[in-house]
Structure formats: structure tokens, C-alpha cells
Image (cartoon, rainbow, N blue to C red; front, side):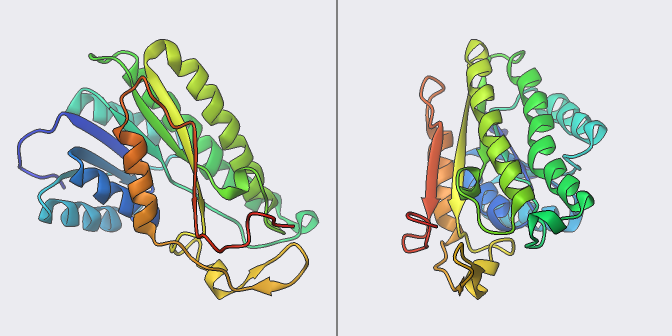
Length: 256
């Protein structure tokens, strides 16, 4: 689904765009003048977001893709290149987690599933964005990775998710370094307790490092969308390498 309004100059790709943070960021970018390509596994969810963007006067294109699959990801970027000729912004947002499980009991299949989405998916999409951004005219673009507070500080029983987000932080820095010569900027947003289905466990009661369970304050997803929109608004000679947005009173600072 796409709009029929005049062509926009800026093209953004959001992965995991059908729900939660991806939906909110997609809609925020659309209000800022981006034609937003919505990628995810579920066509119906993507179409619903596209319809909401178009109803608000924006432009959107819904494309089903599996970011863990190299062929599917390559097809996604081929379609963006063929249809729009360029990509100005990639928001690597698609993510997954495993049920809270002690490290020694975590099935290897659950480990691999989280790593595939949270790390390999980011890598594959970053590769696709690099190849397009370095060759397009004008050259360059911006990549924003959805990290997590877990990129630096874990919760109990979250080995796979924590390891994946620590790795994304390293990939963000490597991308920022290697992107310099191509005018590609890369930064990471680390989000604490956003009101999404994935983050809802904190509102119900999250396991703490001392073994207790605590209901934690939550952050409206619109604040996350506004933060990403700010990062995207900068000229390519300026970059937010790392940004943390979190519920003010959540037990993160001093966690332990």
C-alpha cells in the first residue's frame, strides 16, 4: 500500500514496523516528510500502519520481509533501490526476546532465535543500507539502531537478549566508523520500559537483581518516536552516537 501524493525527497526504512516502537516511529517520520517503507513479517499489520500514515496525509509503502533471511533482506533492498532509487534513513528496530530463563537452562534454539533477529537482522539490513547509501546520489544516509538498556546493563535471566544488545552496540560503533568515508552516520537509541507488548512485563512486575519482583514505571512510546525523529533530523555531519530515553523513575540508574 502506498499513497498517491507527490513524491517525497526522503526515504526511510523501518523494520518491525507493524507494532509498538516501529509503528510509532514510522508514523512520526511520516509527519516529518519521509516516505516510509514499512518492513515486517505480517502484511496485515504493515498495511494498517500504512493506512494510518496515508490517512494523515503522509506516504508509506508496506513490504513483507524477514530480516533474519539474507535472500528476503536482499529482495527488500532491491525493491527500495528499484522503486525509490535511494534510502536516506534506516531504523533497525525489529527485535525479539526469549522468556526469562536462567542461563544454564536456556535452550540453544531460543538463544539462536534471539541472536538471529536482534543481531543478524541488524547486520543484514545495515549491509543492504550501506550498499545503497554509498552508491546513491547524493551519497550517504543515516542508520539508527534500536539498542536497549540491556546493551550495557542486563536484567536477570536474560542472557540471549543481553548478549544480542551488547553486540548491537559494537556493531553500531563499527558502522559509525566504517560509514565515515561514505557519509553514512550511525547511532543507537537505548530505550527503557517503553509501553509496548515486548516491554509490558515491567508494568506487570519485573524480576530484580536481588530476586524481588517490582512493578516499574513505563514510558509512552511517543517519546521514543520523537527521540528517533530528532536523531534523524540532523545533517549528516552531525551524529547522535548514543541516546538513552527511559521512564524517569524506573530502577535502572543504580540497578544491582
